[in-house]
Image (spheres, rainbow, N blue to C red):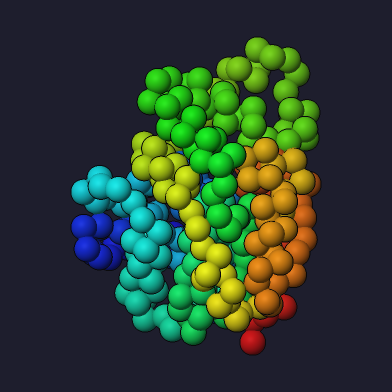
Length: 266
């Protein structure tokens, strides 16, 4: 896997590339990174596709001035990576906040998007979402291991817990999980609370699949259904998992992504 960089405004954006074939842009979620969210499936996707996976501001190896994030900034960081690779048409796959970025990108730049997969995404941060992300920021600053435990509690579905023999084994995993949460989470969560993309998603023209996660406590499944209803070209499907599907059910996640890519790779 090769890592490259592109400069846009105040950000020195790092992105990973691997494979050949039709291009697939992978957009990670809040507190994650290209490798943290997608590292488990990039090698498999790269056997058939040219994968581009950026770290956006606040995550991974990307560096910026540390200012307030906007959706526009994050969209343009991904477009900059595509331009740097000389790409004019890509399949776009987004997860969580990455699904919001992907949907907004597809609404703003429809000519770039060959197909669109939106996993655990939403249209607008209502009062419940704003309350959640406000709590995230406060807890993250107060105690990162406690925050990690809360994310594990609300982020995983029932099947995740079958991997552990007792509470001690589960609690023992918290420090490693906490270490994997990106330091820019607070900036990203601040953006999460301000999401409002209703006017953009109705402009999406690419074939789209919206994926809801059946045990999702972070982005409740009705949010995903609303997103699907607003996109004229969307179909809706579900994966049995909590929000952290890349860790809980990676095989099914890969299958759902790959199947749709192959169906729309013309």
